[in-house]
Structure formats: C-alpha cells, structure tokens
Length: 457
Image 1 (tube, rainbow, N blue to C red):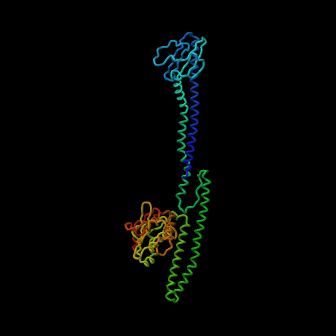
Image 2: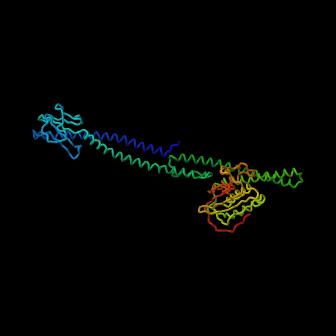
Image 3: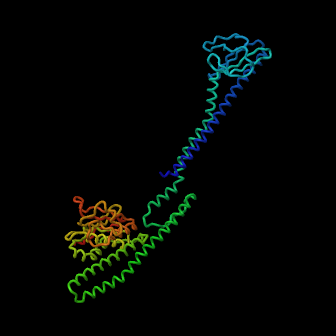
C-alpha cells in the first residue's frame, strides 16, 4: 500500500502535538500538585503561629478548636497534646482525635482511626504542646483540583491545535491535488509542459522532472509520426509506378491465366494504396496536437453529401443502400477535413463489412450538450468484448474476411480525442444484437434548423 503523504503528515503532527501536550500536562500537573500541597502545609504553619500568638496574649485560652469553612476541604482541627481539654459537643466529628502525647514537634503524616491526616506539632512559650491537623484526603482532593485547573489550558490548546492541523493540512496540499487533477484530465496526445507557477518549492523538482520526461516523450512521438508519414510518402511513388505499369500491361494481349494474375496484382496495388492513404491520415490526426480554431464550424449535412459522393461507387459495387436518415442539420466547431475524415472512415468501414443487399445510414442528432453523428449498418456487428480493441491500429475482428487495413477506427479515435469528442459503439439492432452503430458526440452546436432530406441511396 502506498501511504498518503497528507495522512502521514497529519498523523505525525497529531501524535507530536498530543505527545508534547501529554508530557507538558503531566509535568504541569505534578508541579501544580506539589505546589498545592506546599501551600496547604504553609496554611498549617500559619495557623500554628496564630495559635501561639493567641496563647501569648491570652494565657490559658482553650486550644481545642475545630475550624470549618464553607467547603469540607477547609476543615482544620487544633488540639492540645497534654489532655483532651474542653470540647464542645460535636457529634460525628470524632473529636478529640486520638493523637499520641509523645509526638515531637514538626510536620508529619499519620494514620488515626483508619483515616490519614497531616499533623503539625508545636510547643508554645509556656510549654503547652498542641497539634494542627487536617484530613489528608481532603488535602489531596484540593491539590488535584488545583492541578487539573493548571492542566486545563494545555488540554484546550491541544484540542485547538488538533482541529487546526485537521483543517490546515488539506488546504496546504491543495496545489498538489489540483496539479494531479490537471495531469489526470489530459488527453493521451497532450504533452505540453506542466505550469510551474504556484507549485510549492518542495514539489517543483518533481514537476520539472515530469516536464523533461514529457518533452522526451513528445520528441519520441513526433519522430515516430514523421517516420510513418515519410515512409507512406516514400511508398507512394513506387506504388504509382506499379499501378502505371499494371495499366500498360492490361493493354497488352495476355492469356487468360495472365489476365487473372494481373487482376490480383491490381487489387493488391489498390489495397496498398489505401493502406498508405490511411497511414497518412492517421499520422496527420496524431501529429496535429490542437483542434481547429474556436470560430471554425462545418455543416454536418454538407459533410454527409461529400461522403456520399465519394463512397457511392463503392456502395453500388457492393450493392449497399447508403443514405442519410432525417432532415436535421447542425454545425460543429471543428475543421471540415476532420469531420469529413471521421464520417468517411466510419461509412467506408460500414460498407466493407455489411453483406450485399444491406444498408448503411448516416444521421445527425442534436442534444442539449453535443452533436451526435451516427453511422449505422446492418452487418454482423462487433462483439462486446472486442469493442475497445477495434480502435487499436491494424486490429481486425476475428473471423473477418473483408479486405482492409484495420486503421479506420484508429483514425476516428485519434481525431475524436483531439477534438474532445466521445466515440461509442453499440448494436444497431439492439433486439437481435446485430449491426453496428457508431456515435461520435462532438461539441455543442449552433443549430441551423431543418434542411431538406438528401434522400436515401
């Protein structure tokens, strides 16, 4: 699994903040706790001093006192060690406390009657010995309460920092996310460099490396395209010469076997010429990296007329009924040559793969967001598993005995990708699963209204 840098950074910050806050909170709690205990011991010393001064000014004054504030944790008992003395009736207080009379002066912690107390023993100037006592449980509760109040700011700060980290880390990675989205939305032929403006300095070396890679890939692609185009151009001349020689040979008296071989030769030359033309068309479609200007537009029905004029002889030879269905027309924002090449290749494929007596229909439909050019035929169609592979160059469906180069749909896909169009294949007859309908969805049109039908073939 590839861990997310954003999650790793978030976890590292969260754990670091939590760890530092925990350590600081523990030390703060301990320090506040110890300080509270020292303050409580200091209260015992102050009360002992107060008792001594009262004793000096009023000799013989009663020392057995029970001081109780508004809270239980302020309860302090003052008791002589020379005798119980006079205690006022205080039921449930457990007074006087069972303190040993032999206790030395000083501060100590003692267990008395199952409870723990903090005891300060002092001797007055007149020799009277007394103890200032406070319940240790109450002292601990007071110390813990004071320590928690000291730690509370750390807890609040930690919660605020955790929320800030959760909110700030994602926006900080925003440029990286947008950069990834931009690259992901590119077409396969879009190899222009990634804009480095606004890219974080930590990511900029990576972006620069990608740009250098894109430049090398672009050079390689352009070299391959030049090779295909140059090879096709170079092959045209010898094929033209072969075709000329075949025509001259046809004018010579030949035996029947020679005539048959000459027909096969001329068919082979025609197939090679068609292959070269399609290679050149594919090279042009792949080499042109940008679509036509935005103000360029072409009438789909006008393109249909050109295609029919070009392919009607082939359709008549193969006894195919070809024509335009519907009267709607639309303009698309594209170069006329691109639209013509798309429609011609689709119609040519449909004619070649439709059995004699079949039909090929051309249609255009305008939707809210696109212009859909459809070419349908009554042929055997393409199996669902092969509908993506037929766009690969030179790929031909299994079992096909038709003459062709396997480049027609590759040319259509290359031009459609450059124009930002979508190409979809489905069965023309959905009920029986036969025939093929190719739909090319181009950019939203400027509707031109209804025109006269061109008529079916």
